[in-house]
Image (cartoon, rainbow, N blue to C red; front, side, top):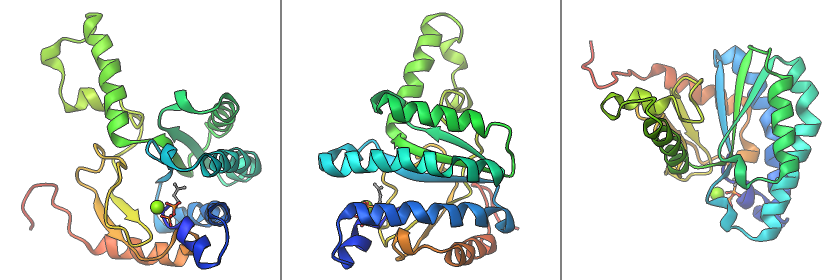
Length: 224
Ligand code: IPE
Ligand code: MG
């Protein structure tokens, strides 16, 4: 969800104003999913690298996450959205983690759309944490080293219950991955759009998904 800062800057407003506008976009995009045939949507809200921003911006974002959960919980429940969070919760404030846990529990019975929010998430950090947990299992004698393969490691990732992404969309004109779902995106298609996240509408989303559905995916095999 990139481009909030520049969107605010263009309007001579503080960066947090852009983040607020960005947060308001989420509902429309989530609600567009069923009609587009999308069952799983993952949004990148805060990366393990975003702590490098000013303290004011970081605490503003944390406040926004708390407010978002409090404000949107009932609508998400009603719309059939099951919410999950991925990322390292250890560095997040206890109050926010409690709200995240509560929202996951509240929506656990939903199945219309599965929304995953990546919060304090980094692909490398996720693989490192998964490896650490796997190493404990090996050290405890529960898994033999020679049995460890890609599928074993995937079971320890935050995304263990989620399918790999088919399509990754990066907004705001940047053409890089920035540590998003590194492992899981091995065969994902990428789409880059110049649109800043606060301007990203359901209509633009639909156009991009339409383009994606025209692509031929071979997964390393040859075409027909
Ligand atoms: C939002 O966009 C991403 C978050 C970390 C919440 P940015 O804050 O990266 O916006 P730009 O890149 O400065 O425009
Ligand atoms: Mg950015």
